[in-house]
Structure formats: C-alpha cells, structure tokens
Image (cartoon, rainbow, N blue to C red; front, side, top):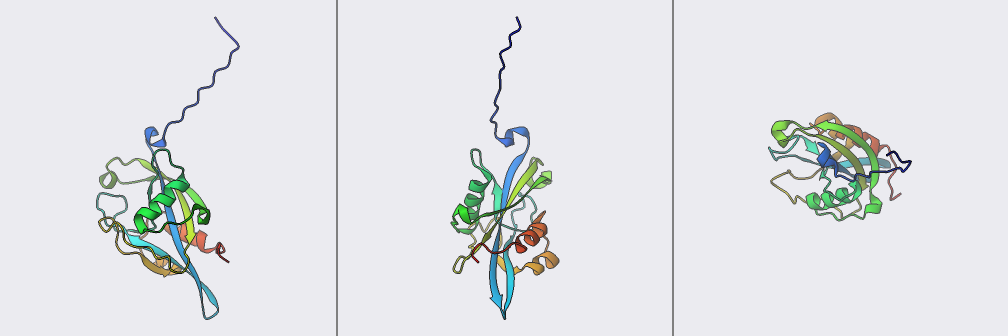
Length: 173
C-alpha cells in the first residue's frame, strides 16, 4: 500500500567508517619586527616515525581527528599533544581544507585518503613549542617563511599554507 508519508533517514557516521580519515595541521607563526621590517617565521618539525605518513618531511603539528571531535577541537588537542601548548580555540585561524591526500600504504598501513583542515595560530612571547613526542618528531625549528618554502622537504600543502597564512595580518595587531 502506498502512502504519502515522507521518511528521512539521518546517518551520522564518523568519516573513518567511509574509508577516509579527517586530519588537522596547525601552522605556528611568530610575527615580529626587525629594523622596521615585519618578519614571519614558522615552527616546523621533522617527522621521524617510519610507520607514519611523510616520514623525513617537515610538518606542522597535527594528526587525526578523533570520533566525536570537530576539526577545531581536534586541532587544539593535537597542538597540545605535540607541543605542550594549550592555546584557546578563539586564536585559531581557519586556513583551508584540502584532500584527499593519499598516504603511502607502507607508511600508514591502510593507504586511505586523508581530508585535511589547516589552521594557523600566532604565537605570543613565551609560547614556545616543546618536543613532547620524541619518537615521532624532531625538535621544533623556527625559520623564516621563505627558508621553509625553498629549503626543506615539506609535508603536502605546507608551502601553500605557509604562504597563505603569511599573507594574513596577525590577530594580535
């Protein structure tokens, strides 16, 4: 028997169940002035874990978004886990969402695509990232933005996000 009743099925399934992962990365910027010129420097660390994606490349703090988290909550958590910095979410600048990024099967086990949300944070005096996971990353290096773009092997989209964030004014100005 046909009826005119409409039924709506709402499916709220974590994206990992659909064969993809959600990830975040947080670009840490230090903006200061030297001889009247504003300079933009960024912290990055070399990825050391051989079983993780992009081993040997430099990257911003970040990782997977856990089930039930928004990308912003995941970014705040990952930043704290990887640097010891507890930064209020209101200081995060949403940069761009990219994907899919296909990770090599031999480095991640599954080779599933990642969809990445990129954020930026301006660090204030005294906010310095610490190495909290020495088995996964090398020391946090602070370099001028151009040094990262021209002189380092970077994780996917890192150069693009550095350029994008560099072009934005500091939230602390």
